[in-house]
Amino acid sequence: MSQGNQKMYLYDNIIDIVLDSYGVYVDNRPMNNRKLIAHKGMTNELLFNITDRDRKKQNVFGKSFSANLVNPTSKRRVLSKLLEETTKVGQIKLSLNDGDLVNIDAGLYTIYIVMQKEDGSDAPVFTDQNNGLKFQIEISDQIGREPVKTQTIETFLQSGEDIYTSSAVKGNVDRNFNHSLHSLAIYPSGYSGTITIQGSCLENSPNSDEASLDWFDISDFSLTTSSVLTHKTFKVNANWIRIKHVPTAGSISKVLIRN
Image 1: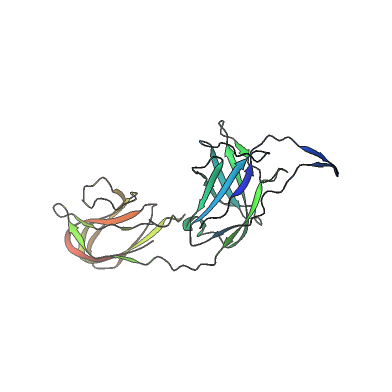
Image 2 (image 1 turned 45 degrees about the vertical axis):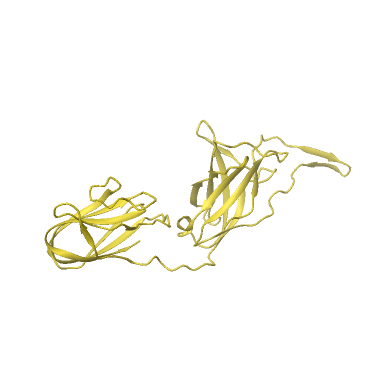
């Protein structure tokens, strides 16, 4: 989903005094009346227009902005993410996907944006003309989503002498969970040999050949004459996972994977 544009200011810290027929006052025109909301379980896009005091859009191509989500009670930062450029001058985009919000409780939070200067320091990006820095954002949990289903591997293709590889199964191709934790259940039958867990970061399905450079090793272990269900956990942020094994005896009937 896409939220409406929010306006932000980049300006020197100079106070404007306005004189009109009613008197003298500080220029602090309202600019952000729209409520920010991000929904767990889906991708959210928040657009921000960067303007000067005269509300003229500023060229920010090539500049680095980051958004920080803060729990207002504990004052703890729960998320920091880079903003993306759009094709429009003076506009940047914050994308919050399911994985970004999965470990964040529903409720009200504050969010502020900073711009990284050439010397590596952070410059403030204001939300109004009175040096305000923070928006309020609601994290909503209206959408209940079932856990990702267990994936089953039951077929291994022989690739080379005594080398067997499974097809590619999803790592977290549609989610980007912070913990990146995966769990394997291996069902051996009198099996002896070496088992290697492999991953791939390609967007599309990687090459299935055993020697393909699309794959990298995550971990490996050995079993000796085992018919006992074997459980392994590992952490990796990869789009695809497969199992490669080199048996000397027995077989593997299936592998279950949860991610």
